[in-house]
Length: 246
Image 1 (cartoon, one colour):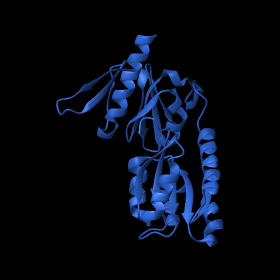
Image 2 (spheres, rainbow, N blue to C red):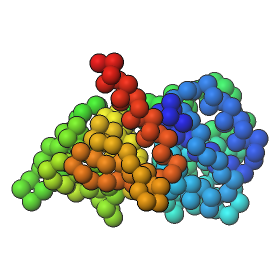
Image 3 (tube, one colour):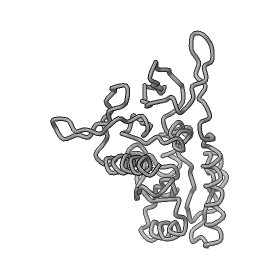
Image 4 (cartoon, rainbow, N blue to C red):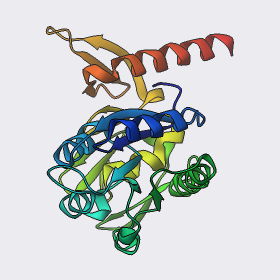
């Protein structure tokens, strides 16, 4: 899905409902479906594994319902939630759970379009302008770190560690939120716990077990997960082509 900007997870126990969302999303090229689930426990696993930006979430599913999924993960760790249900009576509870929208099945193309407009606006509003510096707190006070100076970012418990060529900083911001902020500045997810700025990569190499490694200009080596290898290879190829054409 290298040409898609935002990742969508569809969670509904009805195959026809999942297909309906997938078909309607085809009209929105910035959005790509990265997975489908039919029950709540699958949703919890998929949220960790696939890291979607948006989830279309059914309320009544086998195992865990949609509200229990949000309760267990916590609203702060959820992507944008659009509830998809046949029952009107859950609307108030859905918005109390911080859902962005509430679609009644069967929905119409016009109503779906309204939802997608809201989703896109929310995603754009959540992304920082290109190259806006990150503010980090140190023992000497607040420091502005230009995004273009960040080589890579790794998860560190409840924090994220931001690495520049000279030093690192701790920032109490979830990786999912940071990814949205820096995506426009050429960062890609290397694996579940790391983001890498493409322009900071010196080369891609393989280790003795054929794992792909991004070697940064500082010498730091960041492994790339199997399912993200194609994205990194393509990004480096495009960077080379742009350099040659310039």
